[in-house]
Length: 447
Image (cartoon, rainbow, N blue to C red):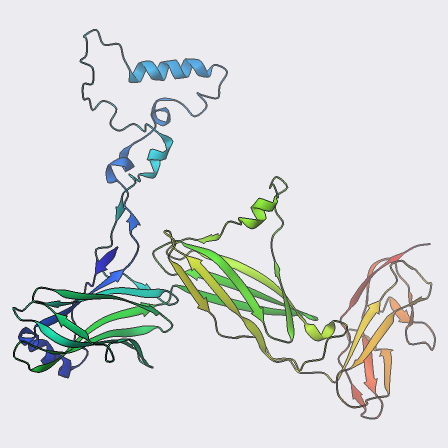
């Protein structure tokens, strides 16, 4: 299943234009066709068909108290009694616009149509072409050396070279065919260069170059947003389809950097959804519709050094990258890998203070303890430190106060949902204050 190259032979430079003028003196010529899968061709006439129930009956006719009466009325309307005898098998156009089967509404007659043009080529696809070198002269071409390569703005990739085993001969009116495949990994202009070195009928050694241009575009875009809340980083990725075909996403995996652990967050399934082992194995791919369809993915990232027994890593701005694979309507595969996704750089802290335990039940005007954890994140000894409750910057009266000389013993003075704010750390030797801890919400109850 192939489509002819729509652009024909194109010259990428003035020098190649001179070769094009001399091609009439050559015995051989290249023809390139792109191997691609066919498409489903809708039947325009089928789009005009309708269900008579949608025209002659109200919406609730078949769901009312007497649906049989509506059905009988419709049958009599579509098939009126004919007093004259009809010839069996008589051809009539009376019901040519009626849907005989619900599947007819798809307007697909079941025929496949081959592409009539070279078509669009997208990044991540496999470019497959059928190349034929024809001998249109009345002489035999001998010792034919064929080369084919892809030229991009960055590199030249050799796809075929028969220098070590030339084609012995191509008879008059004959041809030599071969298939080339190339994984498209660059955007922009590409040139397929086909050359032949051969002996013509007079024994003269001739060189034939031909150039076929095509452009590669991006099938999809990945837009990301990064949000950091305390020690958790959230990564949102929006994938948009830029092709004219639906994309069925087989795999969208985020590969985190070494210092991160990633978990994908998904919406809860509807209670009516039936879970089964077969459903897990045969999971339906995610559909992103043609012409701008989008789908969003959400990932939760945590530092792997937070887990017990894990070595500490110096956090960098690199979060990781995506591996994306998809298929089109008729199963043509594609694969892309994004560049590294970066987060907003944050200043590293030599020590980390966090609240690890707060009593679940707190009573008003009764002391309670808040357990704090101070972690040294450097390779040297630091300290000593003082932890205290800083005075309110807004002048508001605090409802959670330090109780006595113990810095971690506190007392709440008001009922309801309250906040512990202003827990601050001070380095004695360096005479340095650190940022206060985020507010901690508590519920204060009466005894």
